Length: 188
View 1 (spheres, rainbow, N blue to C red):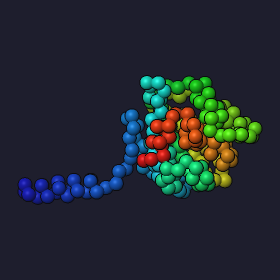
View 2: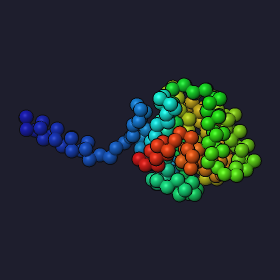
View 3: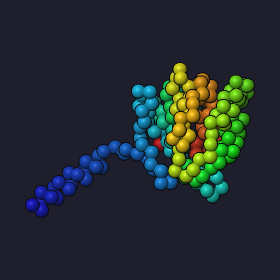
View 4: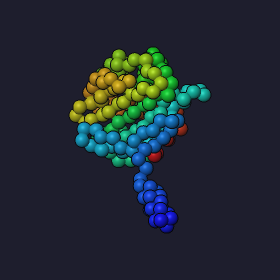
């Protein structure tokens, strides 16, 4: 009986070791390796922690149709994608909106008035967010970017220009959360 138990335990351990990882973790936040968007399976490209001074603010995950470490290639591709932000502290809407507008200015040269209006539309969707709540930005070609804040759908902002600009705030030349955040979100 002892040998049978040992053999079963060894097989179980081998199976567990052989199984692929089903999630990624950062700062206590666990993200799944895949999500479904409009019938397409997206895979976690990277996971990163946004820190401000000495405080953890949010954990973000970027989901793409295929992994990439090249921000230009990611932005060029017209395919479904999702950015999710899980907050690990409370943040007020005013601070969030300031970050969106600063991110646009820093990462999109010659932003058109129409694109600026879309960012103003985004700021109108924001609300104070509490620890444990999330924001998601899900882009579907031909539909636009669906924005959800604290589990509530806030609307869809049309156009790939907006989808690229919002993603550029994280992976553009001057990412708001910093270069180490960008590096982590671009490499799983």
